[in-house]
Length: 472
Length: 58
Image (cartoon, rainbow over all chains, first blue to last red; front, side):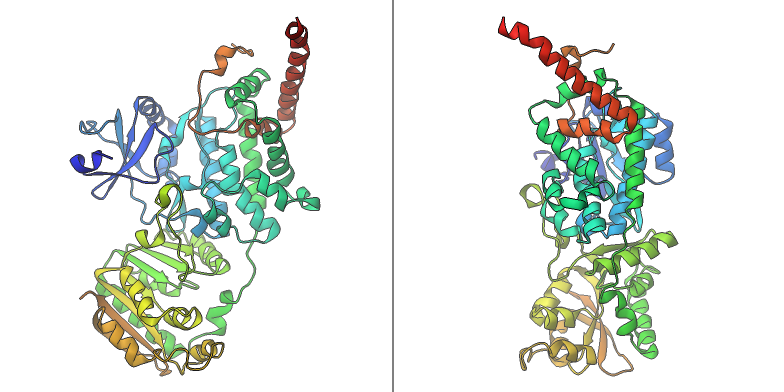
């Protein structure tokens, strides 16, 4: 966009679907431009009590209007939003996170409807996280409710929030691949195929999936404006809209599924470090993050979050990435119950990180484009990638260095080939497949990517920790 | 004013296609009162079809 050069504004690639308002970045600020109608909606919203309450409780991200309205932008009004520490996508959340995001969206909608407002859409992408607390970010979505009209966002809510929850709660399938593959979520038609036979009688399925899909088929020819008028004439009311939201909330609350125990959910116990090893490791991580100073810490292979919590003593916020959805869900629930707002747990396979998605592949930014951090923790991770996934050791270190800002710290653990865990991984591979998986090679690779400023051998003697100032 | 007038039909279109079926099914989800609204909508459509037929032929 031409705006880019003259004003230092950068359009947010994920904000274009609603022509009435658009998100921009300027310096470190997140701004939202509003056209005339959206500006009127905003001023009505800003004057309402329910919105003030949602802001006060932190359920909606902090927002204020810029006065005077900047003259160098083509908008009737400009809002400034509180910065979300790390933008994540629904396919990086655990089940409990998606469920809480759905409940927040419904609560925001309920409060809005009761006050005569509604939301234009119902997407999972309307929600982001402050640590383990969901935040509704799409302030541009609020508008005055029109009497006699159902919620325009219901279909989107089903496709990006309710259906993924049903898939996991009723079928036991991880929902993340469904959302990662389709930016608009799961279609009712696809859901009907998944929920045939007796499965149609599971909670929420008959109405929200089968009836919904059948109604879509039968009304494919009718325009939404005609149907809106017909519903209004038949007596659809705001009370009914509220009843629908109550019904959805009750359903989502019922879907309190807990992903089962997995290999990794037992990892901390079964693959436990000896107490002296653990203490040495904790002290090393604590010191390394402390000297790096505040900012963002990325904990790769976070498991139960032990080191993410240590990092959070010194960092502004920590992004804790872990491959196993069940482990992330357990971590999320623990953090949520503690009221933690600086540690964000995410589900992701480091050997298959989130690619760019949506329009032109940039509407939803790739993980590598979002995740650069002041400190990166890669504890007990390198051997899983290098041996378990056959990623060449130099490529593993290139990736770790690329995720660290220049001058930032990479804290990395090397598990020696004779360590029991490494031996277990090596036993599944042909002999001699990893001749370079040696400590000397690892250290020379590290030295080529930065300055090694700290090093400690764990008491067991088969693991070494390094702190590297990347590019230093 | 309520009614099935065409003037109401053009008052507003959201940027998002809400889906006609997705709008109607929300009435049903809203409980007994909602089912009554959906039934009324279908009844009116039925009546409208029969009413139109003579003029269509004529």
